[in-house]
Image 1: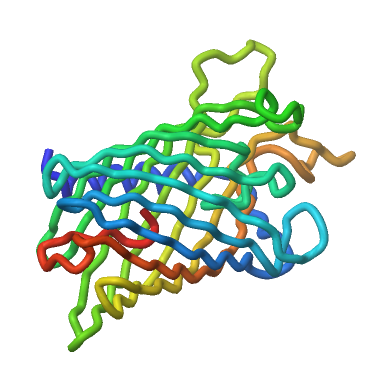
Image 2: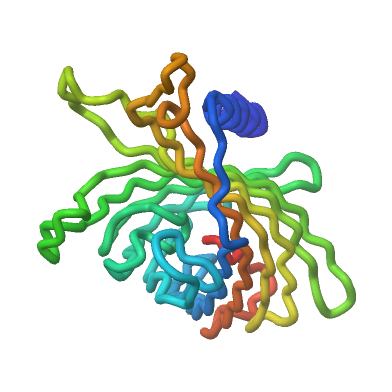
Length: 275
């Protein structure tokens, strides 16, 4: 199947799955603010070593508004060809914020992961497909019973186009990522969970000012897909529970500094700041 057809098919499946919920709730308190600073070391070819740190401010889902540590991330990616690459990541998220990192509400304290990426073209538009496998470590690491170890798979689809304007370039991009827990077994009496557990729809415009610095403002809607026991009133009408989509708006600004001898190579293919 052509890469463009695969992209459109996967996008349709993700959107149709997410639209099946009966209720939609938006968390109060406005959008979460998520500024991030990145240091990318450009290696040979398109390979890179990345470290990043972000904060989450203006709203907190479980307590009073404030600013808190978001996540610290380290990653490495190797390109076998110009289209195929793979790598590894490790994310650290403090136990207090229950996953306020890339996806609000995603559990885990220390989360190692592996990824494989495919890049293709559809005319002037670049298409990306990123498949990641992660294992979120919680209670076994710090003894906190409310954080459970869980394996999850994450699929991200994105489309972008780069516009060159004199010495700078603009990179408008739209991406959707879905994350689902791996469920190999389920007890008969256990409540059936949703097919997708988290989703992240993100729009951005990257501004590349030089080979060593770019900034990317973005907005997103992050959704936690839940299924809980329904509750009914005296007339038999459902008043809560069941299938619910909890939506959290988010606004961010990524600042990326690129260093290394290969950073200014004209043939280098730089990824968006949402690696």
